[in-house]
Length: 307
Ligand SMILES: Nc1ncnc2c1ncn2[C@@H]1O[C@H](COP(=O)(O)OP(=O)(O)OP(=O)(O)O)[C@@H](O)[C@H]1O
Ligand SMILES: [Mg+2]
Image 1 (cartoon, rainbow, N blue to C red):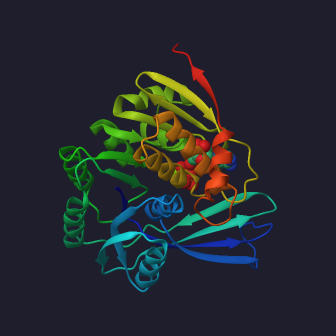
Image 2 (cartoon, rainbow, N blue to C red):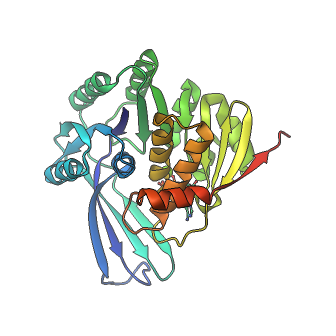
C-alpha cells in the first residue's frame, strides 16, 4: 500500500489569467478550486492510475470538510489530525498566452506540539511492513526538525521504502540519513546541497544518500541513478498547459510502477508519462491509461558514461 504524508494540506486555486503581470487588475477567464498541497497531489495521481492510497496529515479550519469530501470522492483512505489553525490556500495563476505559471504558496498553519505528537502516532499506526511512504513538499510552521527523523527511523524498522520529494534542510536531512529514493528537481538540489550546475554530477552526489536517484529537470526529463549506473531519460514533447505539480505526478507514477512490480526503469517511464500528462492538462493529475501508455512509448533514453 502506498502511504502519502500530507503535512501542508491546502485548498488550492487555479486562476487562468491571459496576459497576467504584476501591478495591474485582471479578470480570471477560469477559476478552479481543488484540494491540494504536494501530498494530496501525489495521492490524487495514484488514484488516477487506479491504485489504492492512504493519506496521513494535518487538516484544519473551514476548508477541512471540503478537503475531506474531495478525498472521499477520489477514493483516498484518510487519516487526518485536526489542527486548531486553518489549512492554507495556495494560488496558481496560469497565463495561457505566455505559457507561464505563477505560484503563491502560503506557509500553512502553525501546528502545536500536541498536534505533531498525534500525527507521529498516526503515521506509525499506518505504516505496515514493506509499505511505501511518499514524503513530498514542505511542513507547516511548528513541526520540529526531529519529527522527520522519528518517521524515518520508524520507517526503517518496518522496511518501509521512503520516496522523498523535498527541499531545503529536509532534503539535506534525508540525503544524510539515506532513503530508498530521492526525487528533487535541479533547483532544489542546488539550493539544499550546493552541488553545482551539471545534472549528471548532482545525481552522482545524490546517489550516496538514496538507492534510486530521480533528479527531475522539467521538460528536459530526468537523470535516473541506480546501482552505479546513470541514465538521462527524455519525456515526449507535449503541449504544456500547466506543469505545476508534474513533480507530484512523477512521484506517484514511480511509486505505482514499483508497487506493480515493474522493473525500476519501466517505473521511471511511467513516472515521466505521468509528469508529462500532468503538464498537458490544466487540472492536476494524470490522464487515462491510453494516454499514459502513449506517453510512456514516447520516452527516450541515453546512458551516461562515468567520467
Ligand atoms: N513540460 C513538460 N513536458 C513533458 N514532461 C514534463 C514537463 N514538465 C515536467 N515533465 C515531466 O515531469 C517530471 C517532473 O517535472 P518537474 O521536474 O517539473 O518537477 P517539479 O519541479 O518537482 O514540479 P512541481 O514541484 O511543480 O511538482 C520531469 O522530469 C518530466 O519527466
Ligand atoms: Mg517538486
